[in-house]
Amino acid sequence: MKKTLIMISLSLIYGVGMAQVKTFGDQKIFTESDSAAKFHTVSGERHGSSFFKKHEFPEVEYIPTDQLTFDKYHTVDVMYHWYEVWAKQYPDIVDLYEIARSFEGRPILQMTITNKKTGKDTDKPAAYFEGGRHSGEITGSESLLWLTQHLLENYGKDSEITHLIDSKAIYLRPQNNPDGSNLYLFTAQANRSTVKPHDNDRDGLFDEDSGEDLDGDGILYQLRKKATTPEELEKADYIIDPEHPSGKLMKRVFPGKGEYLMYSEGIDNDGDGDYNEDGIGGLDLHRNYPENWRPDTGGDLTGRGYTQNGAGEFPMSEIESKSTVMWMLTHPNISVVNSMDTRVPMHLRAPSTSKSEERMYPSDLAIYKEMDQLGLSFTGYPWAGDVYETYATRYKVDRMTGDPLKPSPLFGHGPDFGYFYYGSIWYGDELWNNGAMKDYNEDGIYDDYDALMWDEEANEGNGFKSWTPMTHPTLGEVEIGGFHPKFFGQNGPTWQLENWAKKQAQFNLAMAKKLPELKVENVTVKKISDGEFEIALSWKNIGGLPVALEQAKLVKIVQEDRVSLIFDKELTKGYEEAKVKIVSPELYDKTIYAGYTGLGETKSATFKVQVEGNEEIKGKIKLSSTRGGLFEQEFIINK
Image (cartoon, rainbow, N blue to C red; front, side, top):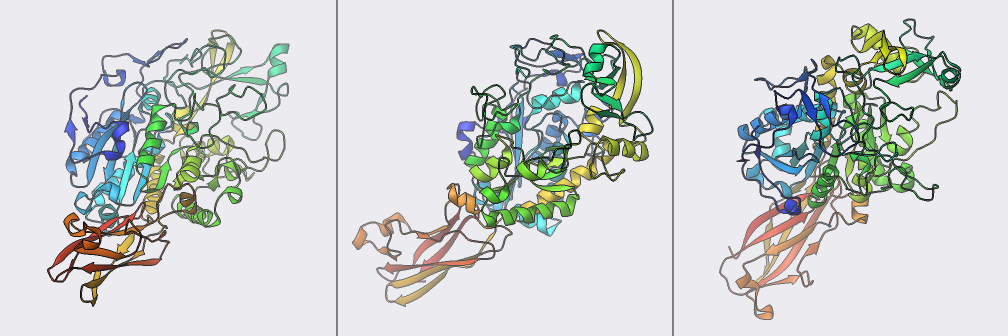
């Protein structure tokens, strides 16, 4: 499949020029693009299978149509098709480029939207939005696709969107993990992140225990087995939930207190008693960021410290997460980020390892809390807040033990990198809600009971497969059934897709509209006396954010706003004999350091200049703000 790409080396990412889209030759043909291939193959050396029967889900659009709609999910190639169409359709405001290659070598495309006639993207305040990091959590990518279409189609029609694109830059990455997304959308398999082999169960074997589609329907459901032997009864930890009249719902209890054993569809390939516990991949791109990173499971040699499942060999060990971090660090003009997953649902932010009040500046936390409420105003999610406390204790007690839930850390997490390391507003929002639309039994918890009730009431029961007897190769007589893992549990049914994609996109758009914006007044030139002039500039931050959070100042990711004068070098050389001398400020670099322009704050800078003679002298005054933008104005002395 031909791709229209701009090739960018990560080592040169900060100096990229994206004037036009270039067409290269055919890319490598992957099995998802090969209609003759009956199996989808993944790269890497592993001890289990690397090929799986291809399957086409009715919920997924595999070939692009003439019009983009959101009544189906879209494959990576279909999404890329639309991004390429838009790059050609809107060349004045769009650049499309390849930011990196995935583990398997697929392009990771990214788009910049800004009015090129009003300046470079790097000279403007910016926002960055990303989807597809977790391979099966595809609703976030759909939200990004919806946002992209909405921005482009409304430029020149909607005044706020037009102003946004004229004055800001929006960076959009719809698929940060195309390998995993393709595995998810073309086979029965599901994994957390990339397809890179990983020893999840630490038995010395890599990816040796993937699920098997035993009934050939392309979906890996659940298996329930009635416990009959003493050994099974000792382990049995599920009962049929007595609260739900259908007998479909299973409820977990303590081992030995149950009547059933539950398994995921497949066989125990490595004979360790667990089913499908070491499938394809297992690394977690959202635990691979450099802030508060901890070793993967088993990496703490004392046995008394913290580890983080899926962390990878070291921070940014994976090209997919590294490409995100490097884009951020080479584009410090970004103030707002959202990298989306599924399925809590929640507006999720830092801190991930501590309470907000313990480590966040009060003024920064106040901004985050405003953003929390802004998000809820669009989405109506049940929760908004930090990972460590709000997420971990959103339900007050453990339903099995009755113990109160405690704050719990995640390490190497994107929102922590975003705030503590990068000093920005950074969310890792969770879309969809596994079908638990409302609390039917009013127990204060949105769980499988509520999901099943809603599925039967509003979804025609399509999200749940009734338990059906089958003979398992090793377990014997079992029943297969449960919630649809792909298009009910992890992502919504297609008739719910646009609702969730749209409302999340509207929140991201609302955050982008709050980017800092410096309104610069016309430069003034005032003659003080013969040969002496004052040159002044004033500006006001009329945006919705300061040009720097307090954390950004602390970690020095953002420089203070600076104003300087630019003259022809011939006019300023010669020190005391120069034709043009900047006498104030007295600093050697003749720069006025103006601090950081806060929300609604007005600032000014005044220079004193001495000029020999009466001829006209042209110059420029330059305001440089890391996250507020770059502005230059011409002026004339002795006009």
